[in-house]
Image 1 (tube, rainbow, N blue to C red):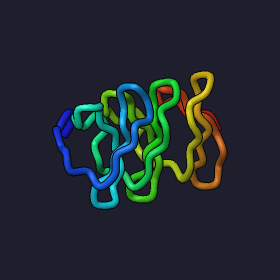
Image 2: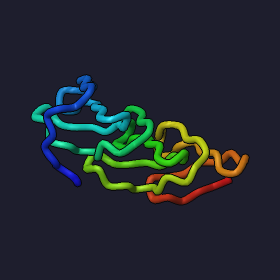
Image 3: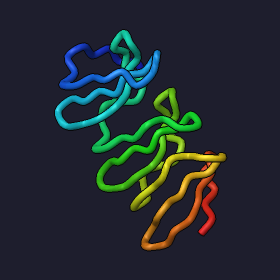
Length: 107
C-alpha cells in the first residue's frame, strides 16, 4: 500500500515541509504534500517522527515505522517512547526497557 495516492482524507495536517499526518475512517498515517501515502493509513494512533522513526499503534500494541513506511520494529509493545540518542523506551508485559533501531531489546 506504500505510495498510494488518496486525496479524500478526513483530516490532514502539515508536520514538516514534506510530510502531512492524515486520517481516514479513524486510522492514522502520513502522506507527502501531493497526497501520496508514505506511512499507510492503518494505525490506531501515531506519533511524530524522531531520528527517522515514528511510533505507531495497531491492535493495541506499539511498534515503529521508518520514513518509507517500512515496519522496522513490529507492533508488540504495551507502550513506547520516541527515539532519542539511537534508542527508545519500551514497556512489554510490565517490564521497562530500551530498544535500538535494529530491534535489539534491553530490559
